[in-house]
Image 1: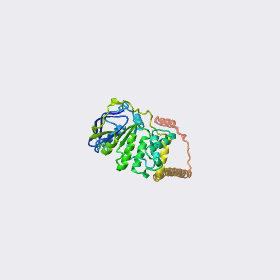
Image 2 (image 1 turned 90 degrees about the vertical axis):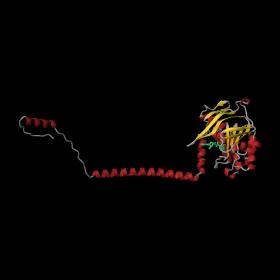
Image 3 (image 1 turned 30 degrees about the horizontal axis):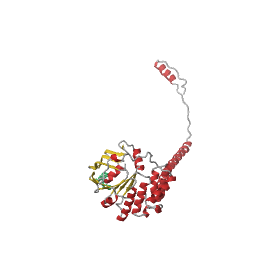
Image 4 (image 1 turned 120 degrees about the horizontal axis):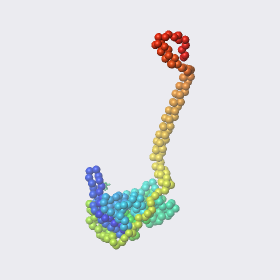
Length: 336
Ligand code: ADP
Ligand code: MG
């Protein structure tokens, strides 16, 4: 069960405060296809981001599985985002230098799934979205609809209980949009799908519930839900999201390989810096040695003799005293 209670979200800009969500309350069923409609700027994306844990509300409460998220730690938010929520965006957000399989696999890597079971899981979900034959293709070899399918596969591969889609058909033609909506409808048969759309026709034809928003508020709900009907379906998976050190290393290496020119330039600049410092150190050491040599050879030409001297001041003192007393004494020897 997912419930929002009196949620408020403000954005503070330099000159004014934008009240993006004003006191919004809504509850969702465990399995339904909800479309959110509303004019641009009315707060649809903000609402989706709050539900998905990508953004934090200012006041009110988001209740997941009967538990308030007010006291959620960062780790709990991470676990919620990684295991309970799947995101689909209008702009696909695929990694262009990874192929379809690797893009989808990334979600499993981030969730810390061991390598052995990853590929099979990815192929299963690619089959589900009708892209099994494109596993090795790069995103730029695919059509818009196919790219959105990859994004949907990536969102589904962790088997999330909630799928959030922000204008998933916004960049697609009407025929391709229908295919994507068919897919989302099928997905919604056993989980909650919340989709933001600009297209009321698609919303009416495919979703089971239409929520309309205006200026940060809910103005219409075609099929409202009272929380008492179902309870506590969404368990926030306790697993921590993690990526192994080897995975991070391999990804970095792969990234370096795909950006060869940049990597070579960075290495070159780094090498020049290091070589420069080494040269300066070597030169300063060489100069110091040279100066020491010159000093030694110059001083060798002028031999120095060091003598030891001692003056018996007590004798001088006696002498002065004697003179002062009017006696004259022959000074026969002054020890030096
Ligand atoms: P929609 O998705 O319905 O078009 P949004 O949720 O993106 O609307 O935005 C709702 C309001 O909040 C808009 O007025 C928008 O300008 C504002 N807004 C959204 N995100 C930010 C942000 N990061 N900083 C400041 N204002 C924002
Ligand atoms: Mg939006």
